Length: 421
Ligand SMILES: NC(=O)c1ccc[n+]([C@@H]2O[C@H](COP(=O)([O-])OP(=O)(O)OC[C@H]3O[C@@H](n4cnc5c(N)ncnc54)[C@H](O)[C@@H]3O)[C@@H](O)[C@H]2O)c1
Image 1 (spheres, rainbow, N blue to C red):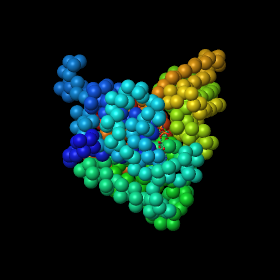
Image 2 (cartoon, rainbow, N blue to C red):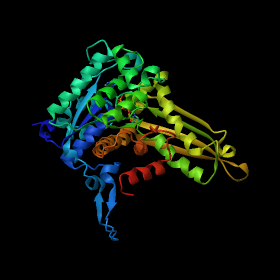
Image 3 (tube, rainbow, N blue to C red):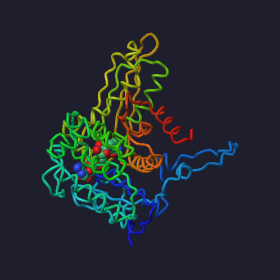
Image 4 (cartoon, rainbow, N blue to C red):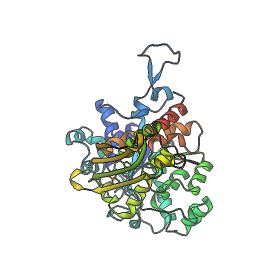
């Protein structure tokens, strides 16, 4: 019996993953390694956070794991399904991604091999650097949406559950400005019927998910859920949505450190961030129009944290530059450098250097887990539309007005919304 068959029960939560690449497979491998071999889950609020004893007894050992406190599904109650544009199963794809050691992959090989992707919906103009070999038939957006909806229904039936969430782990799409077709649900549905070229593949997955009653989070920086049309649909369907762009390496450090500099009211003249990475994500981002999407998402945070309008003398001339360099020898082991030019007493300049050697997908995997479990939890609370309290997980949080970027402020909001602060 394979993993998915063994999970057939009504409280199964089906996690739908467009994009069975480095992040998606690292997430899956970690879940299976935990279930089968007790490998630790690290970096996940849902699994690692401990809630104090409600009686307030000062007993340091009296803590309940958050997952238990909130009644979240256990990891063995998760089932998975994915889409990709190449047919490799999760084991083969994880091997190609090169994030985990061969020994670790062998340990979960059987489980990973059961996860074979469904053919994706792909339009080359949105991701120019990839060559698809496994895509859905059909010529129009309405046909592709129908096919995605049929996939979701089939996966729910296969896993014997109606409870599902979708977390977008596929490649970054090219930069897309909101167009009239995105402005209302009626215009979007007309656009699907007319095969409007401004409807991106990720928006088709999102529409299909929401129509099938599935909450969705977007881990990439593309314009997907933050359009009025899909937000209207989420509210109409009573479904929570969240995005965008997993906050993992450099932006995580940025939104941790910048609030500290701001708290001390030290001036900042410049923040130069550069990275090298050599995975498929890096290859896709080597295309200028796809990098533009990422750059947009990465630049927003400092502006919001420093409030240059309020403190023009300290932050009014801030130069913020972000570069990503595709450098194949590094694979998923990204290296990021930040040079921060700060200003102190009497205008004296100083510098801070950060050199972060991270594994991108190791940082992203626990975010996928938390988003899946917490979106499902939010759905159970009857919440719908944009879940701003999940901003902690994103580089460029969706917000109704001004997004909060300060990591610790986001953390406080997350915990207080979960009722555990
Ligand atoms: N730490 C991180 O790794 C990190 C952080 C923030 C955001 N992200 C974003 O998460 C996404 C995934 O990152 P990754 O490192 O796993 O990339 P990846 O290239 O390894 O995986 C993406 C997968 O998506 C597939 N794909 C592309 N278009 C598709 C489509 N339309 N339908 C189905 N599958 C499709 C690709 O074939 C690939 O297998 C990227 O958008 C990336 O920018 C990653």
